[in-house]
Amino acid sequence: MHSPDLRPDLLQGVGMTSQRTRDRMVARLADQGIRDPRVLEVMAREPRHLFLDEALAHRAYEDTALPIGHGQTLSQPWMVARMTELVIQERPARVLEIGTGSGYQTLVLSRLVSELWSVERINALHRRAGQRLRQLGAHQARLRLADGGHGWPEAAPFDVILLTACASELPAPLLAQLGEEGVLITPLADARGRQWLTRVQRQGSQFEQQRLESVRFVPLLEGVIR
Ligand code: SAH
Image (cartoon, rainbow, N blue to C red):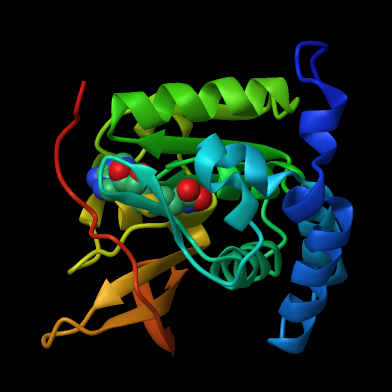
C-alpha cells in the first residue's frame, strides 16, 4: 500500500520517469543477462526515480550509477538486478543488507524476501531512505543507523548478507552472523585494489569463496556519521 501523501503522478512518473522508460530499462536488463522474472517484474514496477534528487530523476533509468550525496552512489540498474538475483536464488527467509544508501536496493529486496534488515552509516541517507521506504509501503524493512561491519547481532542468524559497499577483507562479525549454510554476497577488493563481486558460502565452520564478475563500488567505511 502506498501512503496517500505520495502523489500518484510522481509515483508513476512522466517522460523520462514513465512506465515506458522503466519497461525499456527492464528490456535492457534482460539483454544484459538478467533472467529471473521476479527481479524484472519488480524493477519494472518500482519507481527508481524517487530515490534520486529531483534534478537527477530524469536519469534514473539510464544504465549508470548516480550520485545520492555524501560521496555515495545509487548502483546502476544491472548491479541491483544481479545482486537481487544472487540473493533470491538462495530462497532466503532472513536477509541483512549493509549499505542502505538511497534505499532502492532495499525496496527491490523488500518485495521479494519476507524478512529484511538494512544498515547505513550516514544518518542523512538512513533517514531519507526510511522516509521513502515508508511512503512506498515497504514497512517490513527494518533500518538501523550503525556501522554495518558489526552486522545486526540481535537479528542474526541470516540466510543471506548482502554488502553494497566494497570490503577489503571479509568482516568477521558478518561471517559469524550467517546461518549454518548462509551466504554472503559482497564486492571484495583484491591486493591490487580491483573489485570482484564475491559469493561466500558457509558450511558450518568452513567458508568457501567464489569470485564472480568485476565490479565498482564505493568502499565500506568504519564508524557512523550523525
Ligand atoms: N544499495 C545502495 C547503494 C549505496 S552505496 C543504493 O541502492 O542506493 C553504498 C552505501 O554503503 C553508502 O550509502 C555508504 O554510506 C554505505 N556504507 C559504507 N560503509 C558502511 C558501513 N560500514 N556500514 C553501513 N553502511 C555503509
